Amino acid sequence: MHMVLGAHVSVAGGLKNACNSAENTGSTAIQIFTKSQLRWQAKELDLNEINAFKKCTAAQKLIVLSHLSYLVNLGSSDEDIKEKSLNAFINEIKRCGILGIKYLIFHPGSNKNLTEAETINKIAKNLNIILRKTKDFKNVILVIETTAGQGNQIGYKLEHIAEIINLLDNPERFGVCIDTCHIFAAGYDIRTQVFYNNFMENFDKIIGFNKLCAFHLNDSLKPFGSKIDRHAPIGKGYIGLDAFKLILKDKRLDNIPLIIETPGGDKEHKADLDILKSLS
Ligand SMILES: [Zn+2]
Ligand SMILES: [Zn+2]
Picture 1 (cartoon, helix red, strand yellow):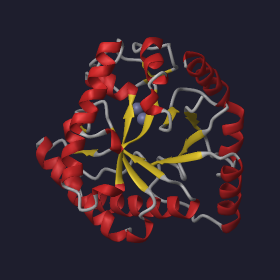
Picture 2 (cartoon, rainbow, N blue to C red; picture 1 turned 135 degrees about the vertical axis):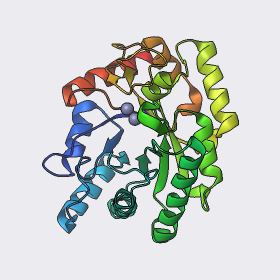
Picture 3 (cartoon, rainbow, N blue to C red; picture 1 turned 30 degrees about the horizontal axis):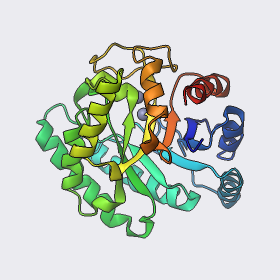
Picture 4 (tube, rainbow, N blue to C red; picture 1 turned 90 degrees about the vertical axis):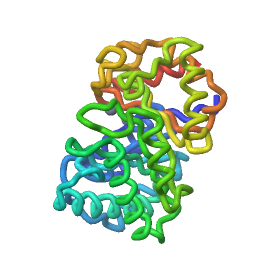
């Protein structure tokens, strides 16, 4: 099995605890928040913590993804939020570089007072500022995640993401992450072979497979097209096991990290990952 499969794990008590969770859950890839996702400020990384994390992830051959704080909104018209968002984003790219983390996942952003086209322009403009200020960290790939479209979020259509990438000065520094719960809530069905193939062909046409860096495998607590982002355990939501089976059997995804962000801790995540492994 060449599947790169794992969980979003906690770093409570220190970054290197992510490696314990990787072991407990049977993950070959993990996603983490390198800092509290609910605060702007990040505690400085100390050298011991950096080295311990690099050592254990290398020993376990883990592919590591970081998820940017949910507070960051590159679409905001509020100057204070914009400044904080740019700083937090740049800071996180640097932290990823220092920690040897290859992928930084982020949501594009939202703005309730602008049109989608205007918000997309604003997001791309801010990303270009970030690119200019992080030229020394080009090995960190910035990964745009598909969204459910809740609350004016950009990214619930594949075209939004393609448009953002088209406006970037360094599109080669970007990738895309498909979240199954988000696309399903956004109105892309993947529950049958035909629907799944359609979605993947659309993705290739509109964005391109070469941009696909990661998958988030989450079932959905809310029905198809609800535009609500609520994750359910694998097989316990409206998406169901058939869709996950199609993904696990898709050879094109053999080396793409597949990460669950389902409810619970290591125990629940191991159960979800075991189900996914049984499907492949
Ligand atoms: Zn996700
Ligand atoms: Zn989500």
